[in-house]
Amino acid sequence: MAVTTLAAAALGWRPTRRRLAAAGGGGTQALLAALGLRSPGLLAAALLPLALTAVLFAGPLLQLATDRRRRHARLALPPLTLLRNLVVAPLVEEFVFRSCMLSYLLACGTSPAAAVAFSPLLFAASHLHHVYDLTRFQGHSLRSALAAVAFQFSYTALFGWLAAWLFVCSRHLAAAALPHAFCNLMGPPMPPPHGAPGRSKILAAYTLGILGFCLLRPLSDPRLFANDLSFPGS
Image (cartoon, rainbow, N blue to C red; front, side):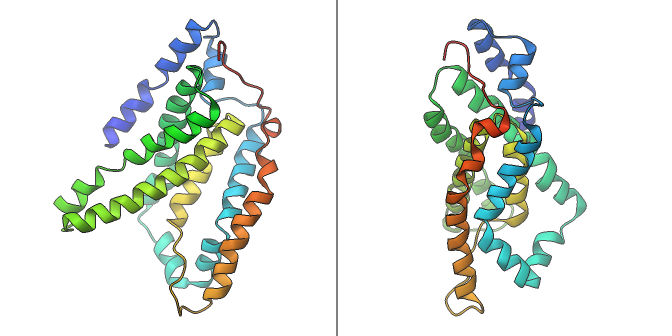
C-alpha cells in the first residue's frame, strides 16, 4: 500500500497537468496552484483550517487533557511511528487524494460540491486492505476485522470530506495536511461510555465543538486564503 501511494504521489499530478494544458492553462505556475502548492494565503491556510479542526475536536481535546493514560497512549509512540503518522502520511496522502485526485476532478469540470462528496470515498476505500492485515497478521476473525475496517472507512470518509472541503476553500495543500496530522495525533473521537467520570462535561464539549465549528465556518472563506483560482474551461 505504501509503495502504491508513493507511486501515485510521484505520478498523480500528470493528469491534472494534461487537463490544464488541453484547456489552455497548463503552465507550471497554474499547475502548482491547482495542486495547492502556492504561496499567497499560505499562513492563513496553515492556521485557520487547523484551528477549525481543533474546535471541532473540543470533546476529544478535553478527554486528552483529563485522561493521563489516553494522553500517554497518543504520545508515547516510537519516533518513526510519530514521523509516519504526523508528517509522512499526512503530506503524501493529502497530496495524492486532494492535490492530485480532487484537483483533477475539478479540472475536468466537476462541480466543487460533487468533487468534495466523491473523492473522499476513494480515500476511505484505500484503507480497506486492512481487513487482510487484521486477519492474516493480527489474529482477528473475519467478522471483527470487517467491523473494525467498516468503522475506519466511516471515519476516514468523514475526515476526507472535511479535508476536501478545506482544500477546495483554500486551494492549499497545507490546509488539508495539517488537520490530517492533528487528526492522526488525536485518533477517532470516542465519547465516554455511560457512567464514566466527567461524562456530562465531555459530552457538552463535543456539542460545543460542533456548534463552534458551524459558527466559525466563515473562517473558511476563500478570500482569506487569496483563493481566486478557477480552471480554464470549467
